Length: 214
Image 1: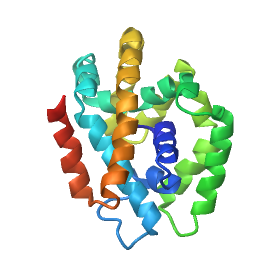
Image 2: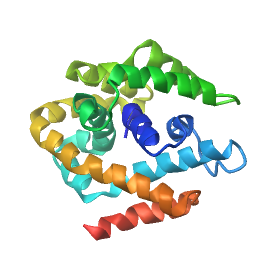
Image 3: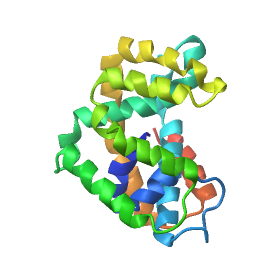
């Protein structure tokens, strides 16, 4: 999942917004390095990513990508899910997207009472200054987001090849989101209720195990 979805799921689960965004920027065991609520958010982020990567619905959608683009399908889909969520926002949240984004920014700033990785601080600043979350409803901005991510390293250069597949299979992917996202929300809520501060290893094992349940 990408930024908007992680923030939405964190909000739905009453989890730390900061922790859920930090999940892509923190390696290893976060225990003892951050407040407990933030640690829980980091672990929820990891569960969400693992559950998504190993879910059979997502696996089938990745097969729509061919050639070099197949390698980057997971990243492209993560960004595309923010597009879908943006378009169907009122199906999943009572507040308008603009108000949610305003509140999320304030909550993030209030949680940031300790040092965070400089790369996260930079991305977080650009995200709000560029109004990324509000822009994802436009597919042109999804293409720009993929190009922006591709610039991070030479290894990511081929990510832009995914965009034609997003366009070609747009309706199928939208239907996949409608099928998958409610399942992900329920899984995330159940994870926090059932295990609270489970270790990252347990999170991964449980997420992978879900593949056998479908």
